[in-house]
Image (cartoon, rainbow, N blue to C red; front, side, top):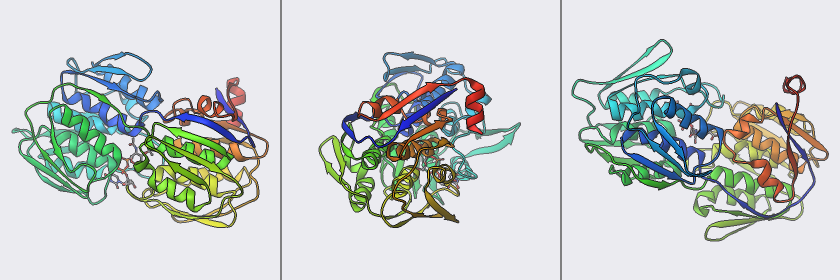
Length: 430
Ligand code: EPZ
């Protein structure tokens, strides 16, 4: 079993390189199913959710060739739809995209219920609404979502999403690119990874416009061809390291970023008293003196990203004054609070709002990464805390961060990953 050990109090200095975006790579990997030509993807992050997605495709007949740490060829000419490895699919949310991709290519899909971080119920009713609008039927059989196009295949439709859902927007796009006629998605998600997916699909021959706005137009095409594509940088990984620099102090250049994607994080850090300077493809963060309290309300892009919520709660835990964080996207994203409390944080939750009374210092403690971004928040807290923080369930963090320990150690953090005998690790993880 692995643990991350952090000895806090060391300022961070130097350059940190951001990897490709996990939440852009996942839909693009599954989108490769839509063409039976080979695709080459570059700047793919080395994270376990990506590895799992590639394994799912491989078990379903795709040929996966890793050309380097971050470049992979995906050939789905022999991909067989219709069944998906239940256990693997149940371990990540991104496997939901099999529904749209297989429906788009084969006219049907049978996929077990996906997994992912536990923020309460994570329904797919908006995905289903989109599939049915395109002429498919959706049923549940033996624990699987079964989607089937009608006898004449999928047809274009006007889809209005009741929620600007990232997953639903992606799945409707995947199904609609080869549907007969024109599809519109109103109240679509506007996240940068929606734009990245649309760019990838258009290079493969799709006809999509309006991605990045709340109104996306798709004209169905006969078939898609393969392509070479480079994934955008991960805005959440970049934001996490910007917060880490503000937490630990020092001066850090967060490189390989698109500053526009970081606007809300930049604005909030400046409001809290950090110094943030933007350049073409990197952002410098430094902090002198104690940070100030702030209030955060997460919302769909371009609102404050929900995936930066736990990281900012860690930072606000030792800022001067009282702050609030209101979660506007998920039912319950507060499981990290118990773990920060073990580190002397003073946080109370009421419904979707956490009230954080800043304490002078956090203190190191044995804590567990209850989900991906909660784990990142504990690393950030550990960097600033007095003493040693031991983080278990590090596999949650490895789902979305490529070598977080190595990257932070490269900035001077006293952080390492250690192997512990299972019985010791299990005892701590309880
Ligand atoms: C994606 O999840 C991301 N996951 C999440 O990142 C991210 O937090 C989320 O988008 C919002 O940005 C991946 O990309 C793999 P949603 P997704 O559909 O698609 C409700 C991370 O840390 N909803 O936009 O599942 C839903 O319950 C992860 O990297 C419905 O009610 O998010 C939630 O409350 C965590 N019905 C809200 O909408 C639906 O059919 C937003 O969900 C779909 C969603």
